[in-house]
Image (cartoon, rainbow, N blue to C red; front, top):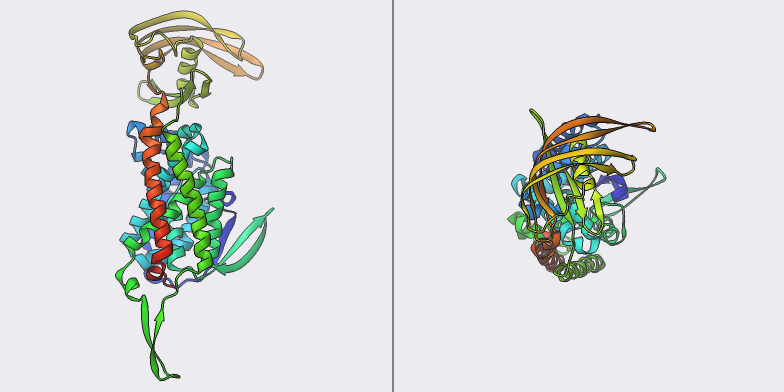
Length: 442
């Protein structure tokens, strides 16, 4: 939820906050502390690679039951701008929503919105492209979007001032919250279908939808009791009924339009998920030292080669030698000891390196590597300017796990979350159409 992702930056909102919003302050503090812990190695400018690999939401890892990532990814932020704008939005909108719902219900809304935002993002992978199975997603944006979804139903008539920055020049204006937040929501939907920025816009939209759909189950009973007020009009000398205002008709139409756009995408994604075919494999390479283990992922396709190389140097060295030696593929269903000792070409470096491998291996029915555990003695390439040198006979003890082919991602992951997304979108649509008068406070 950085500035470039949102464009609209709220600078003032009409507030009638009551109570101490300590959950909001606690969430802000917790996110800041985690940010400091995960960025100190990079001078607090951006998150370290380790934290992204282990705790960010990389969708394909859910196929291997790493569901904890849905929660941990909500408390990670890419860089200082990412966390600043996320926490700023949480501060602006969270206090009022917490004061209305109460501390516990507000926390439930926040966490469930964040969870659903991640699942909503996954449900659109059929549209976004299969490469998004392997792209890490992180940030509190989805959870905070849920708070915005609750705010638009609770306080649609509040005045909200926002600034639109154009070449660092702010253009500020004030309007009703319902229209400005609908504008923001619509931007997430449209950018989700059209943008190539690598931002999880559908996660923002999904969190917003969750906040709308879940709100009726979390609002206090006193809000429902005030659906109709009886007031005495001293001028007329009689009692009159005042029915609470809901969301204006034109705002409802616009709301439904964006929901329908998302619903069509979810239905298409559900249909397409069963036909998804891919030959992509993911490999986790762990290199063992005396006291440390360094792990990293690589993405490989038999038809496309290496799609993503490991970032960490030791896993990258081990993987490159396996790949250069053409050992990623072998005899189908082979299990046993594999010994390899030969010189192999190192592309781009114009040198040959010795690879002496002694490992237990397993290959799948397609002849693709699934598991390897053993030792490798090899030459390490050092590049200094235009000079290339070798440090010979460096030993690595390693283990490699292969996941794939990721053809199961469609029916086992994307399809179920697409069904959940459709259900949540229908719930949100019903809430906007029929429940607004029970919910709207101001």
